[in-house]
Every structure is written in structure tokens, then in C-alpha cells.
Length: 60
Image 1 (tube, helix red, strand yellow):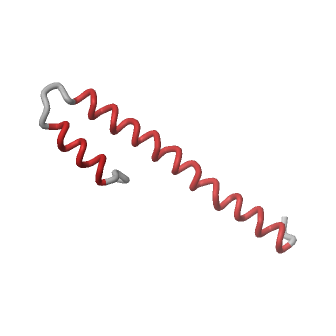
Image 2: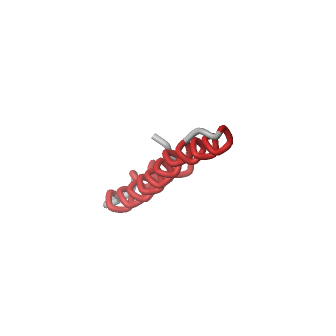
């Protein structure tokens, strides 16, 4: 799921506390947002690499 061990540990610890759902939700939504940014950046890398390859090989 892309969760680092420290976040998993925090979620497990928080889960034991009363009324912890909002904090757990906030932690997981933050991680989701981070993964979304990372996915967009990763998706863009092949396009950038393809542009460089085309420049090197003279392909358009």
C-alpha cells in the first residue's frame, strides 16, 4: 500500500485510542496525497526520457 513502517506503527498505536478515527484518517489522507504526487512524477519520467531519447537519436 505504500505505507512506511513508522506510519503503520503510528496507525496501530492510534487505533487503540478512543475517538482516533479522525487522526488516523488525516494521516492516511496525507499519505494518499503524497503517493498521488509521487505517481504523477513517476508517470512523467518516461515521457521526459522519451524526449531525450528522441533528441539523441534524431527521431521526432
